[in-house]
Length: 499
Image (cartoon, rainbow, N blue to C red; front, side, top):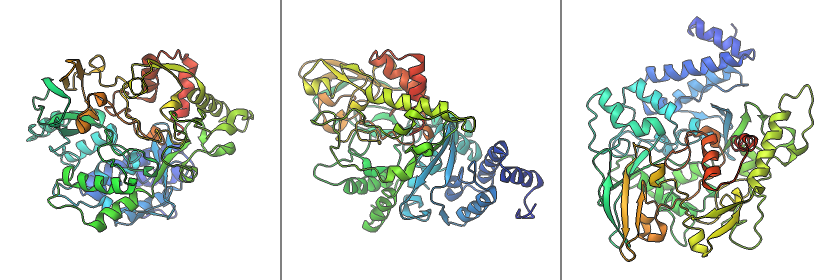
């Protein structure tokens, strides 16, 4: 087989040849094989981070092997390299060219072996997903740098002395990709913590255990708030300032560094992050998402205008048609040679539902109370208003009921708070922004994330409550009594997974 190194085992060589001739199944098997072998070869962070980089459907597998050699040697990841996810391929675009794997972003700058890349993997849409975390566990006996007790385990005092003990200690990380964030009740709080039900026996008013998904470290130029609870958003400062502080805090906390980052390290990390644009590029059903004049994929995303307050739903001039990516697919014509027409029509219908289907918002802390209105007519884009991006263009932390006792799963702590003035009681799995501001009005409120690249990063919501996009759609349908039909739900999922 021309071009295949002689020392490649015959079964792998056969897969390479088949993949080179367009056999998608062979490409998938080659990906799985390389993925597993990388973990057996080495436990080094650069090899752990390299998993999933070495095969993409529709790309010559010999080029993939070249990329494998390059990454293992500390080289760069090719720009627009694709990563297979459950419903297609997502890509990251850097306007400057190749993605520098020698950036401080991928360097261990603390004391526990972690880098930013430990929890922000390009193969996972620049976060982490449970299936890949589980593979890292199995191939390192739970010793990969992501498995550290300061925030990876269910409790910092958990037993991690054996493989079985570690599997139990890191169960929230393994099952839902949740990191434990420890924050105490601030001294100026308008509330008291009066009861704690922590299945792991650790949380208290001094340090609550809050289980949250790592947010993607890509598309950051579109942020209006940094972190789920906005704790890294500073009044009067730019997002670059916020991200610089966040990088330092993460290195001191997650990586257990003994020294703060230098100014040059901070600048290098922020410069790296803010040059990343990630989006779904290929859908298994809809094909190329920039085909037939569609505007999907990361290159178009990098050109998307944005500024704080653009198309703010709570300000004059709001246009509910915040998403226009797939307008051209409205009249996609059917042809025998185009197997994607029906799927693209579904994506367009889902976009229209997202933009225009009206429902009534009630009992949402951060909206109804802030505006003084018991009911607010809305569409999905009322909260996801940033055009073709999907977060809110100004900070808008909301309580959608995700942390209510009724939605609690047995693996989550439950906290009972009492308002010091009104004596009102709230039971929640996570008080959210209230632990940052101390304000009762902020109880259980969280920002909405950027929606691009969703297909790569299940589960969804800050606490992983929705295992799939279908589950997320069902949550909203029930929460707001939208009345979506089975077809509506399917179309919405088709749209969301194409972002």
